[in-house]
Length: 181
Image 1 (cartoon, rainbow, N blue to C red):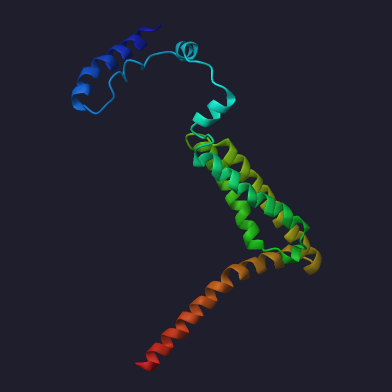
Image 2: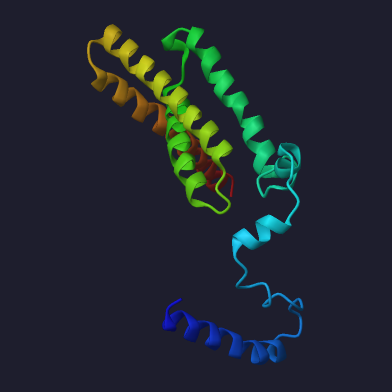
């Protein structure tokens, strides 16, 4: 053991008396277990079965960290069932959103604590299904129109046309209100 490590422990243990006075709501004995090795705790703890470990896990069966990914597999199944639909009936914006959220949330699930590998897996497959469908849509548009630029143009119109229509309706209603008063 290095001398700097001993000095660090001495410093941390010397602060214990002051911290206990400063915060009376801490659990007693919490600091006493601070420097136990994991081997010592593992040898004294009884062995747990797979079911007990998964039940007591921070991402176990009794938490939302387990059930949310299980329910999200429905999105993957729906995307897989859409593989049988013709590409011209698929929404480019919807599948683009699935692709993007799948990629973003896969990365996020591997950063958060506790890591949720089950949620990362389902998000990865949501992204894969979205990417597959977007590819199918672009290939179909290119086969029909002769270029993928038309598909991108349609995507921008599909995204902006509803917003423009809403603004136009709002302007029209505002003009009606002004005319009434």
